[in-house]
Image 1 (cartoon, helix red, strand yellow):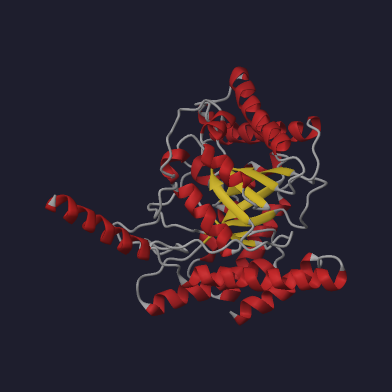
Image 2 (tube, one colour):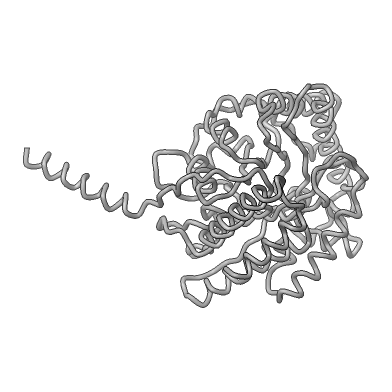
Length: 399
């Protein structure tokens, strides 16, 4: 009996200590129906604090922070990265339906939902794509697109289906200095064309209203293209009728001043958009956005202050350049040094602490949501995006 009592007391006190370190979910505040532009990623993660999956935890924190934008991973290995059961699905739709947490997140009141979606078919596009495999890949994406359009009809949501950093997928061994073989370029081009065609066909054939679905290609070695070297932007984008391009921007945002970052981002984003085929009926004035950016920090105040300032600089530049989105990496950490120390790129850290970057985003959302609410009350409509961006810049500079 004595051991039972001691064990019970230990469990009780441990649970109190654990609960104190657990980050609370901020209350959900109704958001205005508008694109706040600035968001974050909820990909994988190395820790969690509740009985819920890392997917749901991060999603709830992103929404509680005040964002209506989320990006997650929906691939064959994604359930494991979120601490979910991997059911060995053969298609993306089967995976989505078999893991309830995915639909739980899609059903949350995010206006913009982005997802890395590759394939669950087991087809390796680098080895070539024969006619049978092409039909499999097409059907997989078509059926998932069809489901999204029907299931979220009249939801007001915009879904964006894309890939993880594509230039790493294209380059052998993730070697930025390598020249991808021509057959890899040709096969990736075909893979992207199949995905885009499936989504376009679903949108043309499935009756839907007040729900949008788009395909994006994510690139990450754009500077190679400016030098005439082989990469997605130079060799693949002109051949795919893609809707949007996400730029994982680390190559252009590290170790630079504000003006240097702005100058190179203008050059690279303009170059990306110059490679795209014209396409009508798209919702934003620009077709390239920042899908990832972020900065490392150590535990010192000086390092974290520098991280805060540089993060805010990218947010400001993104608004100045009228980008559709700029997504910070990320809510929970999955970046660690060789010695095991965290790179501190998260908004909520391993201790369950909401970092300054979390409150930077939260304060931005609160102020901009209040601005939109008041503007609509006064004008009976929302502001044009440029008017919003100008106000958002003023808000950011005050934070």
